[in-house]
Amino acid sequence: MDFFSGQETLTVVQWALRAVVGFFFLLFAAKIMGKRSISQLRLLDFVMALLLGNIIAHPLSDEGLGLKGSMTTMTVLVLLYSAGVYISLKWPVIRRFLDPSPVPLIRNGEILYTNLSKARITLDDLLAELRKEKIEDVQKVALSLWEADGSLTTFLHPQHQTVTAKDINLTPQPFSFPMTVIKDGKIVKKDLVNLGKDEQWLKNALQLNYQKSVNDILLATLDHSGKLKIFLYK
Image (cartoon, rainbow, N blue to C red; front, side):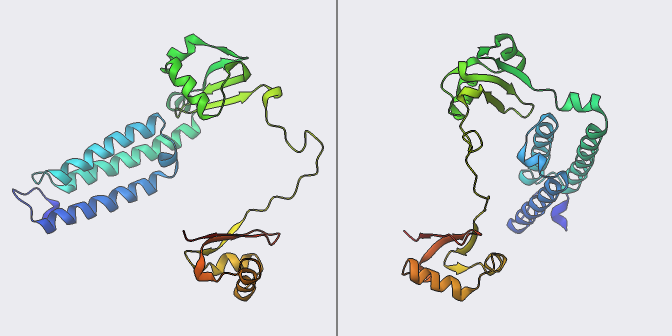
């Protein structure tokens, strides 16, 4: 365990052991913090990402520094982060500080220029975000909000929204999520059983509909209606 403490020099094996310990410790810390810290980068998450990355990087690149101090510091920070998330759920004042309310940037087709400064984004940034949503005309937007995690939520005026089956009085088909039954030339038995089918049925369906065997298939999906789709190796 000498690689834990600061050394004048470290062997290749000791450097490797430090990297392994640092990797799994950081992985464990991210697991404790939860999916929010991965999927969303809000104020608290951003601060934690900067701190943890900086703390673990030094002992992994400087043999004179030990891992013990960095891991202790990271443990305390993870506990503080977890406490901050819990407190923000219980105390609205803290929650508003950590996760501020969204800032309206567009209302009824009009750009609220003063709010661009509050959100700290430029007009070019706003237009770029609208293009990502395939919105080419600002006047089509009823409301656009800059969220706390740095994303843009946009609502179009009703006349510019996509027509749904309900709008034209069509009877919608039941939702059926296709499940993977073949992946990389191998049958996914669990999903196949969940759909009430067996391997022989799948092989027969492949031969009957596509004249292919399981080994020829890169990916195959099956929904609850029995519709089979395949993707071949290219």
